[in-house]
Image 1: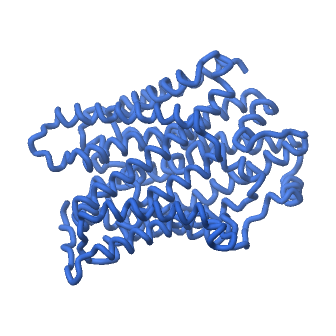
Image 2: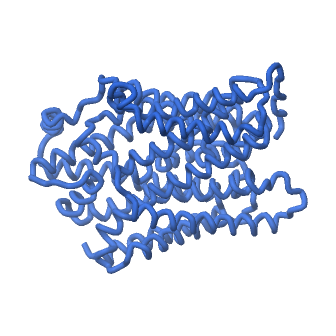
Image 3: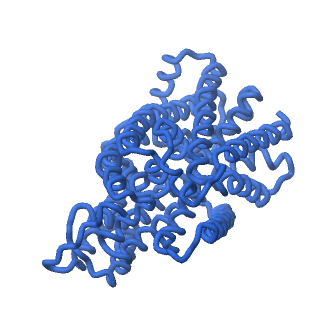
Amino acid sequence: MSPLVIASVLISYFVLLIFIAYFTSKNATSETFFSGNKESKWYLVAFGMIGTSLSGVTFISVPGAVGDGGFYYYQLVLGFFLGYFVVAYVLLPLYYKYKLTSIYRFLEYRLGFTAYQWGAGYFILSRTLGATVRLYLVINVMQVFVLDELGVPFWMTTLLIMIMILVYTFKGGVKTIVWTDTLQTFFMLLALVVCIFSIQQALDWNWSTIWKAMEDQGMTKLWSTDPDRKDYFLKHVLGGAFITITMTGLDQEMMQKNISVKTLKDAQKNIVTFSFVLLLVNALFLLLGGILYVFANQNGLAFKPDDLFPSIVQQHLPQGIFLIFIVGLISALFPSVDGAITALTSSFCIDILGFHRREDMDEKRKNYLRKIIHIGFAILFTLLVFFFKEMNNKSIIDLVFTIAAYTYGPLLGLFAFGILTKKAIRNAFVPLVCILAPVICYVLDRNSVEWFGGYKFGNEILILNGALTFFGLYLISKPGEIAEILPKTV
């Protein structure tokens, strides 16, 4: 298929997003940008969150990982599922009770201003790095399989995509993203289903034959039972639960859309519905990976894991299927980046600049600063994509979870201490605790094989990071002094 045809489809896709943005951002204010005026429909948020949670990493890397890890990734998914119930019935009630626009304000009222800013700072660091890693992966695939043939260099591809995302999120914020994420999730899931059935037809095998081939090639293994392995099932299930609690429940991007729903009950329906759908969708991605490897082995093909899906679709399926794949890939890219930029802008404005405290700042001034910050994050994303282009030397999906383990761990400890205790802390020592916890985890992770008889840390490093932060906060708490619980209206 001509790259010009693909480029035309992508331009049309972008025009559709601009059209949605135009109608959802009419009369938009800062409140519209940050919280969608609390008018989001729960079922739209639930559906759109599928695209945000999966992203280009799931779309490309999860199928590619089946060759080495079988279905072990699904252990992590089961952990995700458990974690969503903690988000729905522990964290969401807290956010709605105190009417929080930025979830990190809980830390301000419960533990003090220093804890609040360090919590928000870790979110900004984690989401910036995580979103740009995902962005890099998808841009790189687009570059290799489409844009190189048009003579478009990598740097220009990155700039064009960032400009497109900036344009349609610039004014409407959360209100726009709820609708664009819904559209993009639909296209991503459509591409997933179409590609599964297209590869099955190309094999010309029935499903029982395909499943038998996957079993014979060791790709249907689900439970890892060696405690020393990083993918040991208990590490994956527990780690997955805490990844959800932190990367969803303690993440301003994910919660910003949830708390834009009018009532707590509807927000909980959103999370519970979404958690069940995610079980099915992740199973389909693993099934896709198994079919891809069966097809590759049957035809004597060999690709790097992250190149497996796009290479087979481009080289061995009808051209129309490749076009659907590209649309699905872009649909996986945008929700994980547009929401990140919007949430980072919101967090920086509220948590760092303190819009809620600035009575001297009128709406016009707030809108001006918000736009400058929004552009600033777009520039930062672009620079980090260039950095990952130069430095990428490991699996993208491993890199995403590694970043999460070290940056969300202190957030987990801060929130856990605030929720599970009523103790006050000495704020001057909070930075020391929040720095030492991930540093200790890094040292333990680097030396675990030597120090612990071959043991390798997996996703449980996130739990350890949070526990060390919690313990550190306990050590700097004020003996016998009980902190005030935050007021009912924030």
